[in-house]
Image (cartoon, rainbow, N blue to C red; front, side):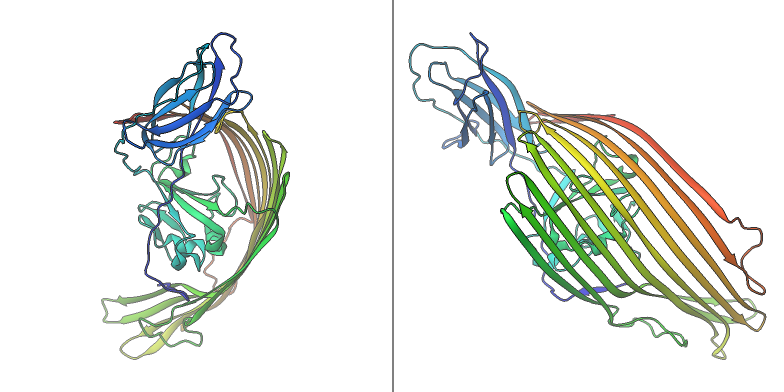
Length: 512
C-alpha cells in the first residue's frame, strides 16, 4: 500500500470558511420613477439590540450593494432626504451568497426625515450539510503537500493507490478549479491533483448534493478548488518546495527477484507563481515539477492446489515519474461590466512502471515461473480557453460564455517477458492515442430576494483515435487477429435550469 509522509507533520485540523452574503437592489422615486442617489441602506439583525450589521449608500443609478457579516432573519432599512423611510424583512439562507431585493420604491415627503430606528431579532442559523468549505491557508499541515495529499484528510473523501478520488465511496464526482471543468482534473482524469501544490489553493469546497447545473458524471458530488487570488498591484510572486518520503517501512519482505520493490521513495515538488495586476489587466504564470518514485501496487498472492503445491507470488509495481505543468493567461477588464480572459495549460508527464513477478514453490523455494513487464508511457495535453463575463448592474447578476479546446496525447510501450520450463516469450505493444476535445458553455445567474435562478447550456465534442502496434514473440500470450486501430467519439449537448428558494424553516431547490 502506498504511504506518503510529508516532511511537515502536525495534528490535523479542519477549518470551515464561509463567504459573507451580499444584498443588492435599486431605489427609485414613486412619483418620477427616477433613481434615488445617495440613499442610506442599512442591514441589521431582526428584533435584536445593537442590531446594525452594515450600511451603504446607493449609487447615482439608484443601485446599492451591501454585505452582511451574519445570516438568518435580517431587516433592510432605506431612507433618503425628502422621502418616507422603508423597512423590509429578508432571510439570508445558507445556500445562497447573493440576494436581489429588486426595486425599492420610496414615497416623496416634503419635510426632513427623523432618524431611523432599527430593531432586529437573532434567528437560529443551521449549517448547510450539502456543502462544506475547508480553508487551506490556516492549516499548515495540509498546505505543505499537493492537493491530493490535502484531500486525504477530509471527511467523506478517500483516495486509492492510483490517486483516484472517491466521495462517500463513489467515483462519480467532478473536480473543478474555480467552478470550471479543466483538462487537468476533468474528462475522467484526476491525476493532475498530485501536481497542484496545496499552497496555491485558498480553499476546497465539497458539494455532496450537487444541483442540476453539473453533469451526470458529478452526481455523487463535486470538489471545487478555489485558487488564491493576489489583489496587490504590480508584480507579486511565490516560490515553494514540497518534499516527501513514501514506503519507508516494508510490511512484508519481498520475494527473491533482481529488482524487488521500491522503498524509501522520494517526492519533490517545486513550484513557482507569478502575478501582475493593474487597473485593467491581471497576468499570471504558474509552474510546477513533480519528480517521484512510488509503489502504486504491491500485491502478494498465495495459491494452493489440489496436488499439494503451494505457490507464492508478488506483483510490485515500481514507478519513476516526472511531470511538468505550466499554466499562464490574463484577465482583461474591458470596462466595469465586461471581463475577457484567455488562459492555457501545458501538461507533460513521463513515467516508467516495471515489475518482476516471481512464482515460488514454497516447499522447495524454487522459482518455476518468472514474469517481467515494463511500461514506458508519455502522456500530456495542451489546453487553451477563452472566457467572457458580463456583469449586470446588480451584484451577482451575470452572464458567462466560455470556449476551450484541448489536445491530449498518449504514447505507451509495453514489454512483457515470460520465462518458465514450458515456454519463453517476449511480447511488445505500442499504443498511440490523440485526443481532441472542444467545449462551449453558457451560464446565466440571477439572484432573487429569497434565492437565485441559474440556467445555461453546454456543447462538448470529443474524439479519441488510437493506433496499435503489436509485436508477438514466440509462444506469445497475445491473441492473434487483434485490430490495429480504434476510434472513439462523444458528443454532449445539454441544458439546465436550477431554482433555489429559502425560508427560515425550509428551503426548496428544483433543477432540470
